[in-house]
Length: 536
Ligand code: HEM
Image (tube, rainbow, N blue to C red; front, side, top):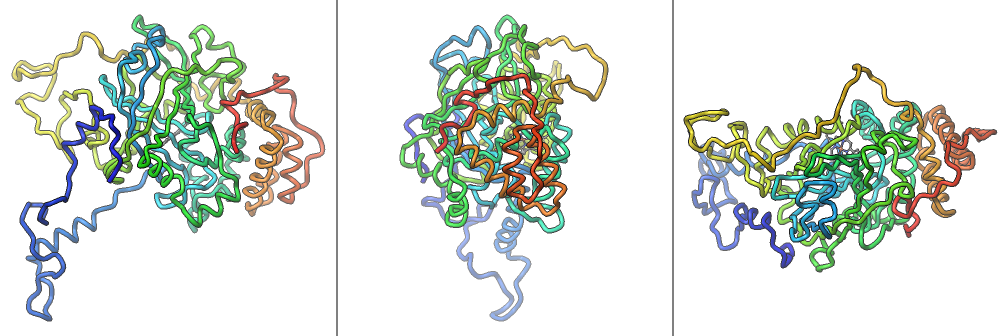
């Protein structure tokens, strides 16, 4: 049975209503009819055929036949846990009206799901991949989802490329090989043709892609978001989770052995630690950028392939997340949880990052099919602790028995018609937008290498060795030589030494001259928070 932390939140009390236990119960059908034999189907005589009228047999088999739902199109493999978040003090009130970020007396219940990205639901945990770090805050003013990864940047700048990118990353379509690996032609073909991937590929080839434990992994909201205060003033923000235990990775060799011996390594570690009362903890840190500084950087804040170096904007610790309770049913909770970037509460808003904007469409859309229609927010794990009252009606899997005759707004027939709220409602930030409809972004979106170089230069000697070894291994599996050459050519824009070493390892002619101008930065040094200096 799952460990029950002392801390019992509103969310846990709400879930009690849905908890079903077989303890002390007699077996019944779905209609509540008691069953005395579930091993022998009803037949016409000792040696005769099974009878259609055996409703228990039919129901049992039918239910089983329909047990599967589609796995997530990405991030299919995951592990989840409940916990709670508390902000340290009220200092953020200057920036946001979000109550859970400004009231230190509040403990906000959360559900977190960690995941790998590329592999299927049954793939091994310790593969080289990005890890998802998605947090659902059940605040008193509705759900806020922070749907992040363990790396601070992303492969592409515009979500319209996401289907192309994922088709390239996933196993190849003709033979579904390789499962959960970054070593194949289609991925590297995409990389060579879309150099905006290069910064993220540096992270992916680093030990950050091999976390030792979910409790030893950072999380990043990646995009620039907005905080909005009570007066309606906005501040740009990047969200970071920093693990209390520090950031630690596995070694490549270890991951290979573990994937064979215990494919559930990270999932088991999370479960066991929570059962044993060793609760994973993370500190929420924010990088805050005043609106007037929007154009102060040599990159665009709307470009998800760029970090804001912490030397330029420090990450300010604001609160603590503790994961202290395992789910009780993997399917009901970890599989059916639906995170969505569009779930924001008053005080938090979006920016025009084109990757973010695409995600605002994609998550809800995919969940409509994955969770079977428009009522999935009624599934226990997704249900807000805040009250839900509206005129949405019917649809598959409707659980509510809506009262009243009129389901439209406004109406004079139902005394209970929900009123529009005077205060506490969500107001979209009134950003001034005025432009031509174009398919083009600011100039700095074209700079694909500066921050990749920054990342490389921040690595210690052995970290560089691991990155070179990873490129050699993954790229060395690519069958098409021109793709290997194309990637080496890009690496030569990042760092000449790196390109030469990779080229030598994958049978490509090493580049003769460096193609790495000083991209406007002389002594790049990422802070510990952004670079895996402390990986072991
Ligand atoms: C799922 C993160 C970009 C589409 C996820 C999950 C995470 C995540 C953590 C798993 C959620 C869970 O545990 O259930 C990110 C990050 C991104 C990114 C950090 C970039 C900064 C995108 C883009 C798209 C996209 C650009 C599409 C345009 C999806 C879809 C799912 C998903 C369809 C499956 C959701 C579900 O079935 O519930 N993503 N993602 N993601 N992501 Fe993203």
